[in-house]
Length: 438
Ligand code: COA
Image (cartoon, rainbow, N blue to C red; front, side):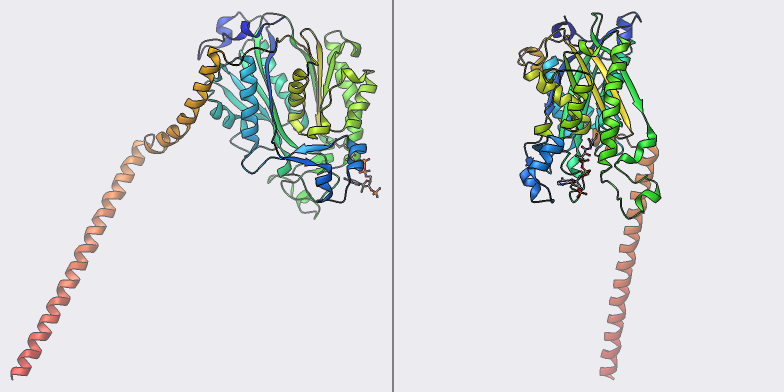
């Protein structure tokens, strides 16, 4: 059993985990979890006003009742940051202790910078590496596997893995076959190294790029023929629903069995399966295939729809809130989606939930968030003003001097011009006075 307290002392700032421990394989344990969903709800009845559909059709074919939609001010980054902060609070970990941040997302704010870099800045995790994971709905399991591997080798000690999406911004709201499925949200976990056995036990990552066009979200680098066929446009989701359904039902059972086999387990050993929440019919099929009773399969698709990379960490956070997981349980995660890609993972659950958030670390964590808020504008200002290179400074000075010289010259010419006008005028006056006298 892992007490979170055991992990709260990370390596000192800048001190790599491998300097503390010999390079024997360690274990990566989930010690914190959190989720964040927008408050705006879009129900099936609301959708009836947007496309030709109805609650009965959506419920029967997908099991979805409602989904969350981000408001204008909410972004993939803001949802991801909030979920990560909640996970850090449960883990009682400081941002300065994080070595790596991975954000699995299909809806980043930019191709670069990564959403993970923005989250790193908002958290004030100043000694963390950060990158985005692009593996569509399998991204969270892929990211968790990458971070766990680095912990197991002793290269790092603490990582935050987030699945975050704002799919409502890339859904074709005129396509009733896809817009009914997707929603927005984020979920996060904190993982940390330990010598106590357990945590992430095994994983299977797979891909079949030959099925790339079954589920796509084209962007500006897409092949011309795809974007010029009159059917597809940039930043819109396209899906062959039946093709994806067939693919998903085929790979879920296979990949979970493969991940179980790596640690000598059978489907019967699973206490809770947390599958990607794409469609209740797919979840039911997976349960049947693995011969798991309904109480061993977690589903919250009814309330959130498909939030892509975020479904598994959101489901994990809710399953823990509902006391569906206890220490020593064997969990199975399975994700599948665009790529085509799929991934399964087996975990021995070791964390002890329910610690008070109001510890000394809580105060320090709030302090680090506040410092991050101050540091952001200061660093930008510093970069713009102070970190200009000497040559840039000299060039700027030369330009200012040249501008000043040109300005003085213009003014002198102006004065000279006006003076000659006055002289001309006076000469003219004198001449006409003389003529008048004569
Ligand atoms: N409301 C009402 N009718 C709809 C509809 C909607 N929202 N969407 C499609 N229909 C209609 C179709 O037009 C079609 O009508 P037709 O028979 O008159 O042509 C009929 O319903 C059946 O369409 P079909 O696409 O064959 O339905 P389906 O049973 O395959 O269900 C999905 C569609 C999308 C729910 C299902 O294919 C699915 O869930 N696939 C997997 C998708 C997925 O999980 N994607 C994410 C993976 S990460």
